[in-house]
Image 1 (cartoon, rainbow, N blue to C red):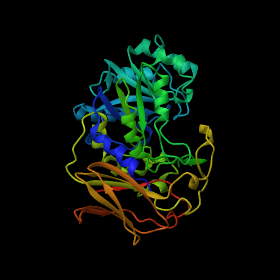
Image 2: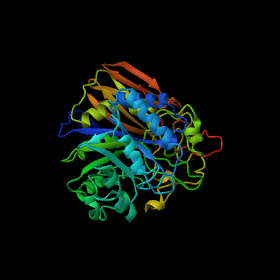
Image 3: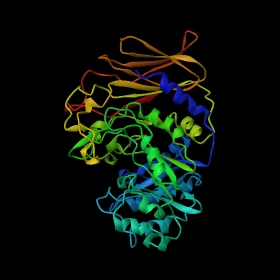
Image 4: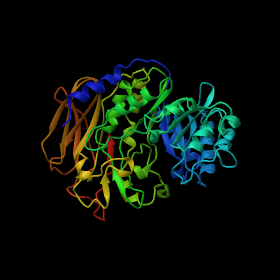
Length: 440
């Protein structure tokens, strides 16, 4: 049961101070938007903007025939909304199976040339902001270098790639080719909670460069059709937002929420799609009836604190997330804990995941927060004004959890979540390692 340490860390989110202009982005997998219309994009933009998000990073794999239509829809929606919400490209050099070509039709240069002039394109330092997912082959790095094919054709760009695979010891040779750095190290390895040690290591390895920190709520890879894996989520959403203040750099900083819509890796914070064709094959059973929208509820507070303009809560709120059955509540169906392809030691999911409920409360003033699983014992936590976070184990209890805020002996607010069962509810007997998220 986690308690005091996170209360203190989370409460500090309401007392941050500003240091420089800051931005928060959400990573959108354009390959998962095949059924989107301009109206769908407009709805996504509206939801993101209401949460305090500044822009979508449009992650695009190559080749993908879906990309031209959906990029056009996204920019049309952002421009029609007045362009206060921005978009920028994040070229995925691995997601489509082929690295992006620098020039020619359907290339990095062609997309930047076409859209960099849009009022909705995100610019920093008077240049179009651009990112990548990997792309560390020598030829690909050379494309982005000063005098390389991309800058020679497009002009100035503000380039903030994810080249995490180079390692902190291997990035030094390429610092002259980048303006900033995006770290993909945002999930813990094994049965531990997340720390910001790798973020600080990347900052130290990229002196004089801006830094983009990844914030993710969860990770369960279910879309491969082969080996799938899970990393520890648990307290991750609350932990990473607390860590954004600790990592606060000397230079302008960016936060990137990973992701808005990657259903195949279970770290989506956007709405479930009306058209299930947008969910990766194999992931449907794990995503159905598993909403994550409530993870957005605290974003205005987290983001305002990160930007140095903390909000004073005007109402009591809670958000809570958990798996619906124990990690040993069925077959793993081949899912492992950790991933050997990431240089990790693989183990069983039950060895790294906590069977528990993870919950946060924003309180207008001191109050007690109560959690009860089914007819089990009520567990009470003392909460302070501001943001609090705790967790409580299943301890073999099943049933519908009830969450309550109690002040001066009276229940101020209360709500229930999805029922916890002793074994998986999936028809094939596989454990669902995705999280269910709710709030009030």
